Picture 1 (cartoon, rainbow, N blue to C red):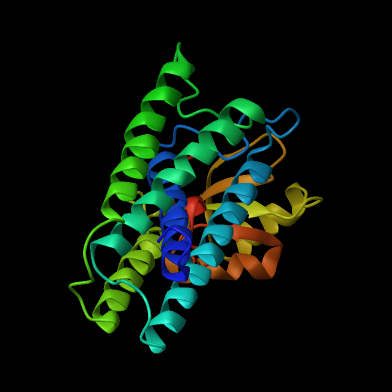
Picture 2: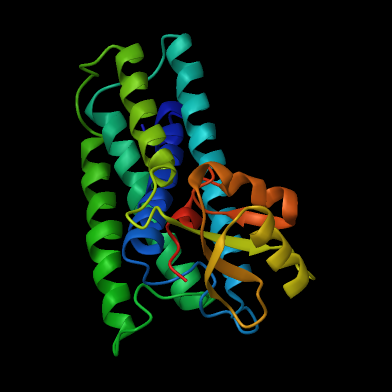
Length: 249
């Protein structure tokens, strides 16, 4: 059963949901780390949020691949759309956290679960046990369940809704919706930044030393116009939809 196409695509979708879960909870809500927090030479906030954005973009592509594979199987009337498929998704969810812990935390060392902890290893192990090993083992057990109890079309709608909801979470503005974080292109100096602020009637609230990343008070409907003035990323502008919309500088 583990070699069946529907099981593999379920694992792929669960893997993406695991990435979304980490991005939403750890990058956005708790803000315990960035993707590349511990990479030497990448302490520039501009680079950190850019890589967080690429991470979310990758998770969108992985989720799309999983949903597309399952949709094609459903069109052919194939697949097991009950508890075994839920088990496959849980296996993928747990697999994400196992891979992330082994690769990102311990082998590459690009980040840890909680950087401000006196014992980061304890947090890594706790996260691995709760969200990696436990769902992986439970999902592996569910895969042995009986035949599907849901029609394929209904199951696809449920899975698409879960994946879309997770991916679209960052479209909802955070509580501090009156402020926007703007990342400008490399090479943009104070003259370009202040010209953009003047053009959009925006008030500077905070900036890094190089004025590469700024937090501004600006009307929501004018945020997207920063892209006309040399911005690479603008939170709360609809695009990108990911960790960056929730960044606190």
